[in-house]
Length: 163
Image (cartoon, rainbow, N blue to C red; front, side):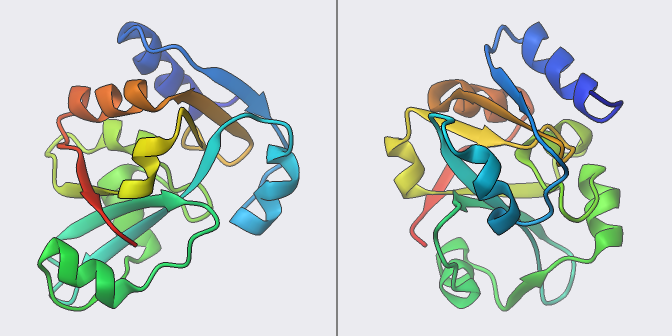
């Protein structure tokens, strides 16, 4: 375990949110991670850190890992113009994360609540969900209801879209 994972686990523990932790080699993509997720009972997610065209709004869009995401469709649903992937510098500034480790747990670093969070509506059906703990050498799995509670605790509304 490293210094990026500990604050996440400490935060979850302080909120009374139970989780299971699974270690694995570093994985930067969903394709690399799928091998290590075998046997873990959870809906694994991919997390897209996006920005609007002006660069004045940032979004974290969370979807089941196997879904293909149409950014135009997402933009229409969230009510913004053209969306694109935010730069590594923006990712570090807003969530304290680096590429390959994008995670909703980075929201603990979003003290100003500037990142807007959207979840794919299909995740409502998930019993358990899995995410990196701000580092791509492990996966934390928690109940979806606890994940929603985490989002509320860090000051982010739970908003759903269809991707």
